Amino acid sequence: MIYLDNGATTFPKPRAVVGAVCNTLMRFGANPGRSGHRLSIRASEILFRCREQAAEFFGLDKPENVIFTQNCTTALNTVIHGLLKKGDHVVISSLEHNAVLRPVEALKDEGISYTVAEVVEGDDEKTISNFRSALRENTALVVCTHASNVFGVKLPAERIAALCRIYNIPFCLDAAQSAGIVPISLQNSCIDYLCAPGHKGLYGPMGTGLLLINSDRIPESLIQGGTGSLSSDRRQPSILPDRYESGTPNLPGIAGLSEGIRFVRQNGAENLRARELRLISLLYEGLADISEVVLYTEPPKADSHVPVLSFNLKNRDSEEVAALLSENYDIAVRAGLHCAPLAHEHYGTEENGTVRVVASAFTNHSQIQACLSAINKISKKARK
Image (cartoon, rainbow, N blue to C red; front, side, top):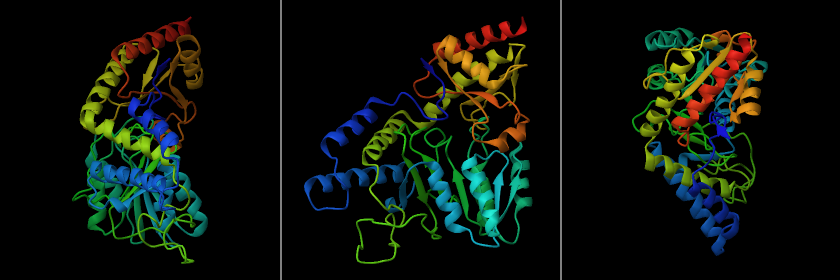
């Protein structure tokens, strides 16, 4: 199969990631931080090593502020629910995933309001102006995606974060489609909270995610329970990372994530992004020559896009096109609304959704050409 659904989960994984998961299950399958025996100590070392790697990779000087989560969605919910209270206001972007939209929508029942700031592709100044106009006296959080999971459009995140710092408003970045692809450093950054999946651009296993806290404003924890520390205290520990890591962690997944981060560091996030963008640009150029294809964004560019491309065929449902690619050509893509209705409303594709193609470190030129050829054949059949 030609796998081009890397926006959901990168596949295949580096061999070292698979090896780390298997090795941990076979040799170090004990609870970290819960016992003093050799296996438990070794398990704790695996967690700490990954925490240190993530802190170094993202330029955070406090490894204890790296929180392991189940996924990026859990990290985002921790920040959103953990910071906001009745009467607060939130600003989000017009390209948000449901991981942001649904929590803020749910909080309306608790007296918390939100405003959607429009993203203007190719005009960062206008986008920043729209965020500035959306701020209110009671704005307590700005949270936005770094890059659209549907259309690949990259937001000027650092500049939006700097705007928030001027107004003393916490800023949270959803790096679901950028972590491991776009270099991100929290050193001397105005990004207060960075939420990232482990299973996408960091090439870790499913069931892994990260919350990096770069602020003195510490969100409340979503859950409480055993942390292996301060067990006689009936209240949740306030120290990090224990405050958020109740229950047994996903040790095999975290071991794999550690190797995934190593893989990205060895190859270089900029190098990976440049290579993947070249492949997506090749696909974009080929699709632009097919009369039945509808494209929605400007041609992908390094400063304004990540390697994510959405398209449709005229008079064809996106799900139908994806099914044909899978059944007839063994090509895996994703179709539909991609859990991001705001982004589809923004681009006018909310009724049919889009067909999405996302490259990874393991995507090659021949696979993109095969995908382009298959789409061309499907489009010709559609004309008959």
